[in-house]
Picture 1 (cartoon, each protein chain N blue to C red):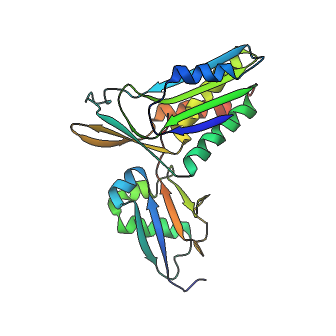
Picture 2 (picture 1 turned 30 degrees about the vertical axis):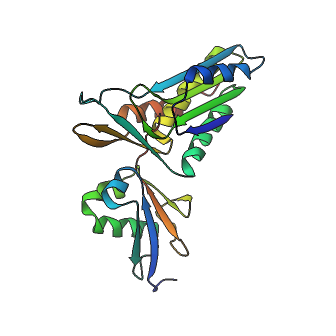
Picture 3 (picture 1 turned 60 degrees about the horizontal axis):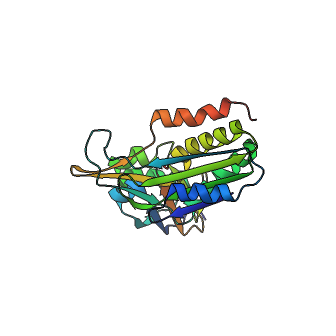
Length: 88
Length: 155
């Protein structure tokens, strides 16, 4: 599905939810097809949060399942950004 | 193995009593309760702690940790209760218990689950003080505590 722009929702938790918003709708252009592309796009839009958005301890879920940078965004309805967690 | 999220204060002594009443044939029950501190690391009064959770992944992460502990140690029964939402200083944040035929497995299982909960359970912690709010991330010591289990032998 390369060459086609898409819209998707992105949810943020913890400090990123406070800084960016709980959920936003994002338009991705043709060629932005993977989770890595989404991370980079968000880091460009929110440079003050790029360290957290692209940090190695920030995890992502696509439609409720954990995903890595190479995961395809095709058909994905919602991406969730999970910055470093801290329970206990 | 039972994991649950609590959105209101709970009594760890009652949890321990209930847990102890359900385990037969175990020579050891170990537990840990984590309590919300009244002061931040900077020494400010903490008015509240917010524990933000994920609607699905938070409980799944707790269950994964409990399941890994069950596989790793000689454990007959496990229990994790974790608060979410607003927590007042002095209230219990987390209760963890393990029952085993022998003490070492029970103690280690509780230690192991706490180290993993601190760094892997899907919660985000915000401390509210008169000076403002700040999000708390695990420290390097927290990650080191978790990572020591990667190198220790399974029993």
